[in-house]
Length: 162
Image (tube, rainbow, N blue to C red; front, side):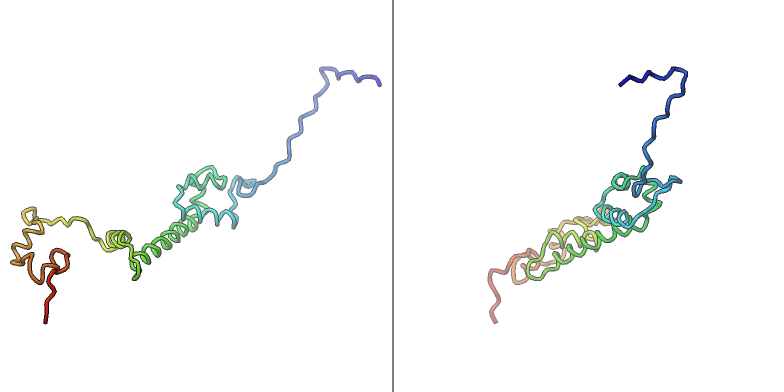
């Protein structure tokens, strides 16, 4: 078979074919606007509940910025975090109040976070700062006798007989 000779250099060259544009779910629509889907809404809500930063969630679903994420998914971002906090708070509360096996750490955390308890109470008047021993001495109570367990937390070695 005879070989074809190359076209003359002044002949127009054929244009390379471009691959057809494929629209991927969640990517920019023809007008460069993101189109939320139910799948993305669920992913955003779950990721927000796990505490992922908005930029990371945006990357997860193929968005270029957290601004776009916040524009299209504000309810999912808020609901995801609220749902997770609700579940964790419920678990913490059940552990703190379990009548058979209470979790002291959970109870202390709950009281500090929800009831305003603190390790140290600071009084407005610096001269009013007193140690527990000073307060006991001023009150006239003693650390011995039938009420000592109230002050020390120890069991009274001699139970009262009636």
